[in-house]
Image (cartoon, rainbow, N blue to C red; front, side, top):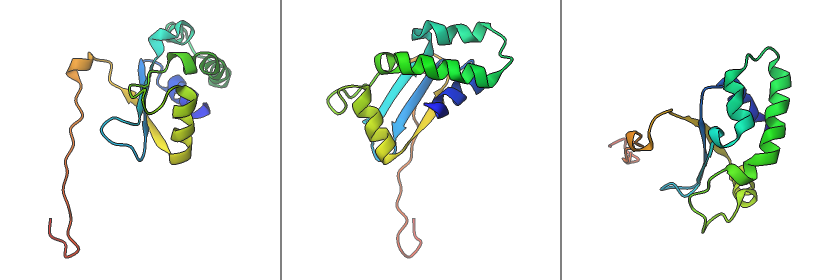
Length: 122
C-alpha cells in the first residue's frame, strides 16, 4: 500500500494505475485502479501538497478504505476479488505502472517475440 501511495503522491496527475503480476500473460494478471472513482483522491489534484508524508498517510487511509471495491480485475474467473488478486501479486511479484491519460482506444501494447539459440543465433 505504501508503494502505491508514494506513486500517487509523486505523480498526482496520473488517473489510472495498472497492476501486473509477473508470471501471468495475455493480460491474465492485470488489474487497474482509476483514481477518478475515489473522489477524495481525485480531489488531491486540486490542492497544493505542502507535506508529502501527511498526504501519503491520507492516501494510504483512502486506499485501505476503497481499493478493494474500486480496483477492476478483468479476469474475474482467475481472481474473484481484490484480496485474492493482491495475495497472488504479493506472492509472485509484480509491477505498478502509470497508465497514459488518453482514451483506451488510443493505447496499445506493442511486443516482440524471439528466441536466442544457445549458439547465439537469433
